[in-house]
Length: 331
Image (cartoon, rainbow, N blue to C red; front, side):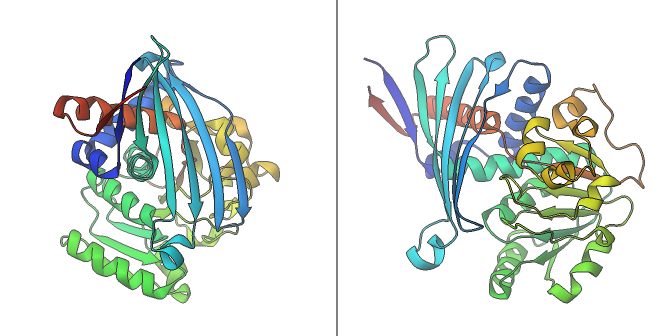
């Protein structure tokens, strides 16, 4: 018999901040670059395009003594029809040494904070440090997490313009985030204003389930950094392929971004070669160079790796144990 700690979302938020998650995610990327961590093939299925999907991501961080998996489901109708979040799931953390489960953690909270942290790590490594203007495309949970992470690492940001498919959601987002971050100017952008907003942005963040390009090639000016967060499944796309042909493209995992990230369409059409895609861990470790000039366009293709979930969940479990937070289950 052994015990396993179980943490719900409220427990996680008591012990993990965005700054903590950024630290954990960066460590995961570095371990991956050092070959001290790895990911296994993703199991995914889309029940209804842009509306209902599931995936199972797994991997190991041998350098941290852990492995595990995350199973997650997404239903865009949940908030409106059922009054519950669109995303739900679980993260299981296992010990390399004993092979036993160390804990079970709410997957929605871990996913939201680690994905926001991933965007922050990408922007810090690739965007111009003096970036002030941001365009956000997508107002869901990731629209909030991405901006929280970004503001942690890009202190010069003073203006964020927001675009989404549902105007009422955009208005609610602007009101909420304006109150939360009074030092930043938030404003809504219509579809007619999207191109101009993009052309006048230093950083563009896309976090939607779109299957068609929302940001066109002629929307992007020299020097722009793009965090492409939404494309994490075959068929998804937020950026026109031509953007990638003239950008420095950095992914979380080359294998994943070619198969199901923002890079998938450009690679399939021969516009982008897989061997030209860098990995963020290699940039962080100094194995390859990231941005080389203020005029260079950079793209961070973040598909999401199980490593991020596992290492963030483990941090939460360790801190929860010290504070006796959560529930111990005898197995």
